[in-house]
Image (cartoon, rainbow, N blue to C red):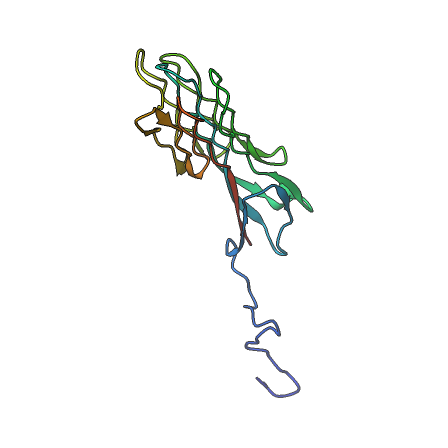
Length: 219
């Protein structure tokens, strides 16, 4: 707009990129989802992230006969805020591994792996399913975030009953009990992310499921 005498005032303009001339703070820029381990590289303009981490679920125990076998523990969930200065140019992301099904009789299950972003945040995996009567499997322990959710416990087998107790659940997955048949209890795998597999007394136990890392980037 001209005010005369060679005085001009710009009353508005649009950037060539089409974005607003004044970017609002805290705007969601992008979401990166890791279902396998890799490297997190920030999107340009990121000021902070809200990261959600879930550890891997454990597998249940396996023991033939009328013995108690617990399900595997569920992975923990952690939600945390990290600044761009914390992340730097990039950070390694580890997605917690699933506890593989147990195929050897009279054996505990396999623990789930922890999910992490460098050394800045971590969500523990579930504890291995346990053989024997009344032995629960520990759920993963959560800490360090502004929201911490421990993984569910893999329930222990009841004394004198056939095994096949449920695996523990996680914030993003659910554990189930074993599948009963005429011959015994077959393992039931966890579902979603970070869930524990069931115990079993026939063929093999249920497997856990892997963890996940979700990174929401904000301006």
